[in-house]
Image (tube, rainbow, N blue to C red):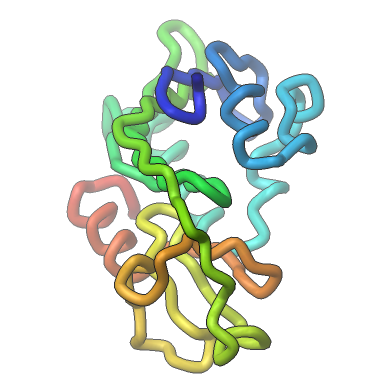
Length: 183
């Protein structure tokens, strides 16, 4: 089952359009209850148009630029891709497709943990604007700029909440810069 394991490969062209998907993509996103992300619906979509946060766009645009300019041959990083009842760790590898300006994203699920006895979001966060890192899933309240915390330090659930906005936290930005993935 893709929600528990499996490799997914998708290819983005130089302008950001999703042009190819292989592997159990649909099964993976069905585990997220995300019918809108069915492969037949997302092929041809520009991934940068789907990123509401400018920091996340900046990171992925830089990844593409570094690869297309030949400054790095490959970009590797660990990432969390959780659903409402699964904690999923993945390894992501980006590299140019030989002979093209397309970038292949290879995603390998490395660890899955089922989330049992899910709890509601604590009342104190019910109306809070929450920022969550798209990479490591650390979060902070928008009103507390220095309060990035791993989600498991505070909750026994993954935050799936209407008030969550995704971004990339300072720790992940620093790591990507140190590794030469960002300009």
